[in-house]
Image 1 (cartoon, rainbow, N blue to C red):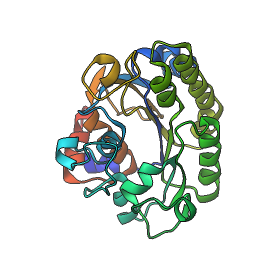
Image 2: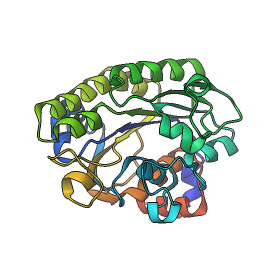
Image 3: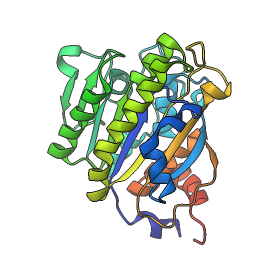
Image 4: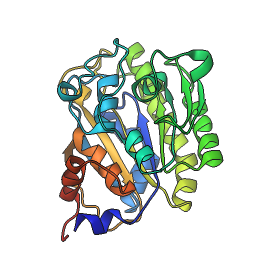
Length: 278
């Protein structure tokens, strides 16, 4: 029954707005408009522990908890040892791309990251075949999206990830209860309103979420709601994807892989949760 669903191939754009907590998603007017008009499904995601960036990139892309996949902090250069969305796409003959922070290159392509050789990546033998990676937390979100759109238009990836850092950067500098943090959230929403309509027209499923939230004192790693609750939007024209109001973060992987028509047995089993009547 699951097989009949995943045979319908789709392309996915996965937008990861680093450091966006659930509370401050209320400032994302465009995304709220999509939800109100029935063009997006919106729900709360509970981050795994520790609620840190690199461990949760790996969780979102493998469906494993940090204690299982072994990426437990941001400071240790490490490559993924798990089946992940990029490697599964490559095995299935799908094209992958990323515009994002260099930790993604280290997790899924090679370590250590070489700024000269790895910043721009075009290699069909790598898990992330087409990439543009940055190393500065204040690298402008607008440029991340523009870099991403160039890759998308040139290489037409089946799975494409855009990962921006300005919300997280503002949160660490000023805390989540600051005008700087809220401004970064609004900028991200404006960027999404610029690109999403075109992506919808071209038939993509778009998933927008975050890895972790941000406390008022500019920190994250624990289970406090501001640190561990994040928003998620799914934008597509499917009628069979049934989501509740809240899910664990490990299920995000299965939403993506089910749409792409790939996945491990564990991912496929979890995906059945989202399809009622099959």
